[in-house]
Length: 178
Picture 1 (cartoon, one colour):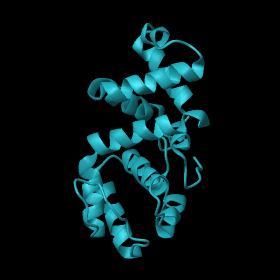
Picture 2: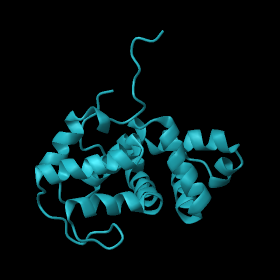
Picture 3: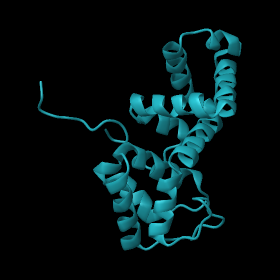
Picture 4: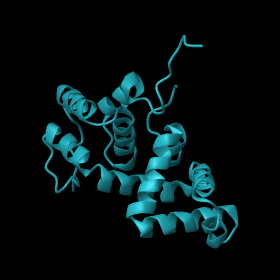
């Protein structure tokens, strides 16, 4: 699947595999009720229904409706918060590993000031560390989100996101099997 770099959060959610998108929403449902309720409220408002309407739906139907709505531009901030919370809570170790491999000072994966640039070889090796340790699509989502959500954007990371097939979103396509 071809995707462009610098995806916004709602685009990121739309391009990732449905399985991973559901994992992100389910994680919020199970571990962060405040984020889940805020997300549900925003989706209800966007759909012009009361939150209780969505709450009364069976969870699979509710989550499918929420995810399709969250992939729209109008819910960019809500979707960004959902993805950011999932990454910072569920995959904090991945954030720490990435920043450590880059030699960037941080506190539990959170950085005050990112450097304007990073060395190509260091970035490449940091990405290899992540791909060797975490699910491929989770790494892809993290790197796309990292590039989009930070004020500093690294051209060499953008090039990697555009050119490295391992950093594409969604399920890998199996060709030639019918």
